[in-house]
Amino acid sequence: MLPKKIAVIGIGNTLRRDDGIGIIVLESLVKFYKREGLDYLNFGSAGFDLLHRIKLYDKVLLIDGINSGLAPGQLKIGKLEDIEYTMDTSLTSTHGLNLKSIFDMSGQLGIKTTIYVAGIQVKDIAFAEGLSEALNNKKEDIVKNISAFIDANFI
Amino acid sequence: MTKSSKPKINSHPEWSRGIVALKQGRRAKNVKVDVHYLTRVEGHGNIVVDVKEGKLAKCEFQVIESPRFFESMLVGRSIWEAQHITSRICGICACGHSLASIKAGEDALGIKPSDETVMLRKLLLYSEQMDSHILHIYILVAPDLLGVESIMPLIKTHKPVIEMALRMKRMSDYAGEVLAGRHIHPISFVIGGLTQLPSAEGLEKLYKLMLEARRDGEETVKIFKKLKFPEFQRTTQYMSLSCDDEYAMYDGDLVVNGKQKTKVCDYKKLFRESVVDYSRAKIATINGKPYAVGALSRFNNNSDKLNKKARAVAEELGLKAPCHNPYLNTAAQLVEWVHCLEGSIKIMEKILKEGLNGQKILVSSWPKRSEVANAKYKPNTGTGCVEVPRGSLFHEYTIDETGNIIKANCVIPTNQNMGNLEADMRKLVPELLGEKTQEEITFDLEMLARSYDPCISCATHILDVKFVK
Image 1 (cartoon, chains in turn blue, yellow):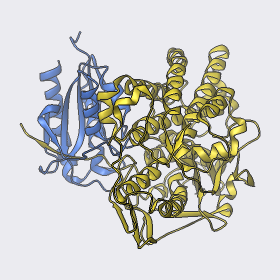
Image 2 (cartoon, helix red, strand yellow):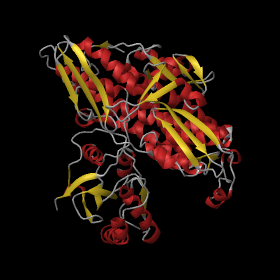
Image 3 (cartoon, one colour):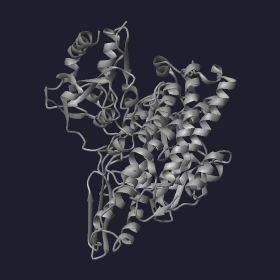
Image 4 (cartoon, one colour):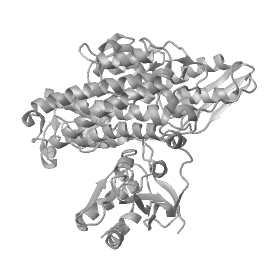
């Protein structure tokens, strides 16, 4: 029995190449490294639904593509408070997923969930299916590393 | 509803701390509005207005998103998988796109779904209308009426109201989960029926949440009836679905101001789309003139079909058809929210009393990939239309003898509204000259654009982030 309620959440659009990396990694985690007691959730490009879901858990790990100036496919995992966002300065949209707004709102609404972000540097987010070669080559390592993080921090 | 030419006035005690009055400045004669990236809309759009010595030289709403090529993506794909692709067009109207897609597929294939399936589709459509409307009303429009930049300051000053709004939103999200597997990118609704029935436990919980939402809806009406919307009138053409027996959202014929009844399959005869050089969105016209779609159009064409509670709310808000004030699209959305909630409760009571007959809903014969590859189809074109939160949504597919799509056309409500928004802007700006400052005119134009709830695109959400540890 796990002491806390924990979710692993994949985010992304699989019709935009590397933007779908969060979903593809989530699917591999479920297939090869599924851990009992954890919830695995595919959130696609959902927006506010995420806010409702996050608050149901003590801890969540969000897996998503990022643009952080790293090498394509490089993985960074950190707590939400360890990340600086430069995306939007105000709530500009509610339709696509605006993670910064979701995080800001969750903080202001007093949601206590500890949020971790596993960010994977993208290379190509053109409209097409399938990852870029750079990310495809690193996919297996990314999945293993995230699984190791889950085992070390959540199990 | 009280109307005012000054939008930032509020009298409801719940909102009383959120007011920021505009400072009056010099009245404008030369105005240059250049709003790059209008906020609190989906996607990227600019408002560009140029007034020289009191004459309107330029007035444009520029859509600057890159094209998304969904129609091209559909070409070569099986008609059976179209709705899974098109539901990705929008993170809010995912169910609406899915249903328009399914209807187009059924039209092309000559498949008629059961009444039970249609009932569940209507329930799903109602839930999405409620979901989107409450988001627009509270998250996107309320800050305009209260003179704050976004919802963020309101969380501090009016936390119980925002929590109520999120509770209302949660109810709709949950409906999507129970009915379709998930709200965003629905899974179980397919051509011909559903691949899985909603669980009895989920339906019971959803019904309870809907009953509880009635109280939140009443409170929302109390709040918004005291907020003041700008006064502005422009007579235009309002297009929507319409049918004899209900407030049309899922089915019906197209009407314009209650007339020009047109079958959905003949939509190209009713309106024309054309490109303009300053925007990446097409402009649509009927009889050579712009027209509006969305909640206000539906209300104007079909208000006599609203259920009793929704009619009462319209009366309470002072909304009467025909209404020619585009700012009151938000009020029409609130009326529709109540209509959809009551409509959903009625359907849920029928389901809970009579149960769902899987034999009439489930499509166990939904073809496998290998079966699709070997099947022969009659080449055909099918059209599907549903009313999504922002208006009439059309999908049209042509299939070949393998069942693959060889041509696709999607007409999105926001595109249809663009010409009408610009026409509103062209009438509004001269009315404000001499009355308001440039800052006030800019604000009024932004608010006008937001009242249409434009959904310019579903942008990718890649984050620019920096890890500091």
